[in-house]
Length: 615
Image 1: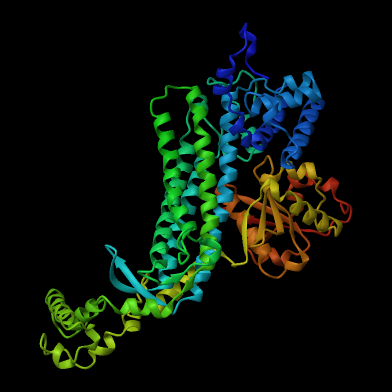
Image 2 (image 1 turned 30 degrees about the vertical axis):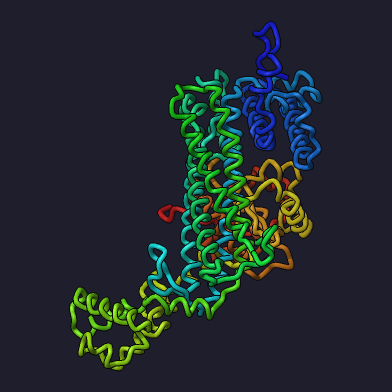
């Protein structure tokens, strides 16, 4: 089914159809296309295009289609559709007839695909953030378990100064942390809604674009219809984030490939992430790391390709922009897969402590310590640096490390060198002397580990925004606590529509064991509701983490007040909620209280969190 055939007298050639159609890759957008279409039905119902019954019929059929898509029950590729948008419309038309033909009123594929792609990018960012946080937690565990091991640090790929292995781990934690920040910035920039912009000039229908954007979880609508349909800088930002993240992973891989080599021999990689040679039985090759390193160029290429595609395009939409997806989809997939594989590698690492220590004491890495020692004796650093260099030359000629030279040999170069120099030249002293913030000393490393552990939260779970794949876990929690009359019941179709409101806690095994939602009323008041923690996971801070996550979301949305109604006010007062009067909250009373089984004997307490303390 083509959405544009009326003006044409003959059909496309088979070659052009194959060249033009995008279904084989944009089918990845089906859930986003359905979700955006549900929002559009509500917008054109409000504009008088659809009756209430028509809107409800379309919404229900779209929900049915989303369930089929999630279960893999749709044979999309055999449909012959041009793209995923025409596939969805054809399905609706088959089941609903002429009602479905009203869905596209006032909407162009230009604003439709721009919306779908922003929704897809937003969903992927949540998945990528989870993977990055998982990598950070794995590195944190590796660092905590190997704080005592010391290995050489390198500059110019030559041994420079010794560092703790934990310090090396935490360097990549810092890089992955910045990758997270880049993704969050990208999410902020892309979270504007193009829908309602039409083909390029806007819509003639009375669409409430602010409400439409809010319904779809966007921060605001795009403010210029030309810009909304024709720019893909949000894709570029995600591709740049992926490229930078892959660059970090590639450097991580290169370090470990070297550490694992026979020449360095600092670590052993597990059998689960290595392979053998078809000819040489002794070989154990770091294939997982080499593939991570190799896939980096593939992701870089996707960024470069889209930059070149966009650089000469006039406003507004051009078919060239169909090339925005395949590279993006692949880059995001490769980055995500590489992060998962990096986690496998991290879990397999075993440190060869003796080899690391031996290497750290070779190469005269303590020459800098000797220079600093001479500075403490009153010698200017530049002079001390020259003396230490002369000592290194002498030690090389004697084929001995500095710490094995006799005192009289050292005193040839400065009479100020005394017996106390030997303690300064010890390996642990060299390392732990660097205890300033950010250094490799044990006190600094412990301080960094504690800070990172606090930033990441408990190591056994992560708090994140919900996805459609969490629906079953959320539904079970909501139903359980509704049966206990602690929360209001929420039917599944309502949970699907409000999935963007929810956040969840997820364990390392993927289990969802807590959820909560941030609902925003039309007046701007927000409410935390449907808060529930599995009975087997209570008392571990999961509820607190969820509330704090939603308060942060409310703050980012520039909201002023967040409401809770609860039978456990003490939990919320510890989080700085203040008691309030339900009579001052007509939004809540009108919206939900009539549904409550205890509406005539309400025993819940209202509390308000003020995000703007000046209120």
